[in-house]
Amino acid sequence: MNLTQLRYFVRVAEMGSFSKAAIELDVAQPALSRQVRLLETDLRVTLLQRTGRGVLLTEAGKRLYDHAVSILQLVAHAREDISANRGEATGRIVIGLPPSMGRMLTLPLVDAFKQHLPRARLAIVEGLSAHIVEWISTGRVDLGLIHNPDANPAIETLHVLDEPLCLVSAAGRTRGAARKAPAPLPFAELATLPLVLPEPSHAIRKLLETQAALAGLKLNIAYEVSSVSAILELVRSGHGHAVLAPSAIAVSGQAAAFRMRPLAESVLRSTLCIAVSAHKPATPLLEKASRLLRELVLGSVAPLAVHNRMR
Picture 1 (tube, rainbow, N blue to C red):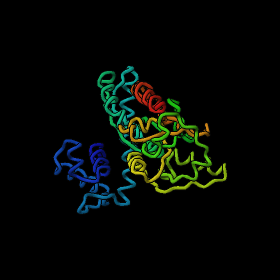
Picture 2: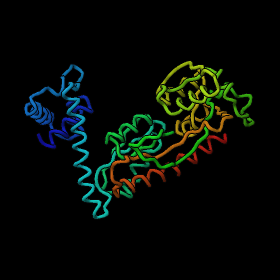
Picture 3: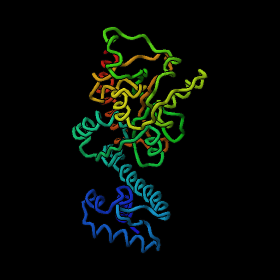
Picture 4: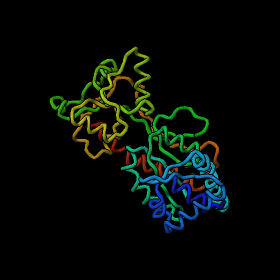
């Protein structure tokens, strides 16, 4: 067993395909397959189950995957630690972004890294806040943007931005009141409206469910959809209302299609934080990447959110 075999195996497992992994790793597919077979021969187990649509991890493969990710992370951190002694921001860093932020921040992040951290290698993954927290805890992600973090000893957070949540409706449904700012919506009235909400693990859904429980109310959930873009499409088509932060509308690229009404309850706010592992040393790369990410959010997302809230 060697690090190359582990790296190849992890990439095949994550891509679910030898051909896709070979393209990403820039190696010939036969060479990639041979290294994985050597790994299986050495361990005397089958790690990957070949199917017509790709590959799936076997039970043994799942166990090795967890070990392999940890081993590769330790090796990467060892290299970064040596570089850190020289004060250099080098190495590879994985940044997790919520889908609502990925569209706006991916290109600026890449440009910022090229300008300010040219010796670093950047990888960006998208996921819900709960997933990003899990990825940071397990070492898959080094740095992430998360909404409304719960107390978690595995991560440390840095506050970036607060946004009041708003009721989002199709523009045509509130055209008569478009010229004047609508009054804040009481939560009791919100609970009667047909809502298009994400799944229960989503940060905004947790906030709404908690507030409903405290008020002795039950939310009227018309549809449960994970994707913010799909939620907005349903709202735009008149299938219900959403509860989102203004920045989510701003980054959608179709703010004119919606009208927003503030919520009366001040506790219903979306808090955006930067999260890192509480158990890993802060390398120069991690610290500089965290500062870059915070500056990008405050410089691009925050102004758009304020402008959209004032519409």
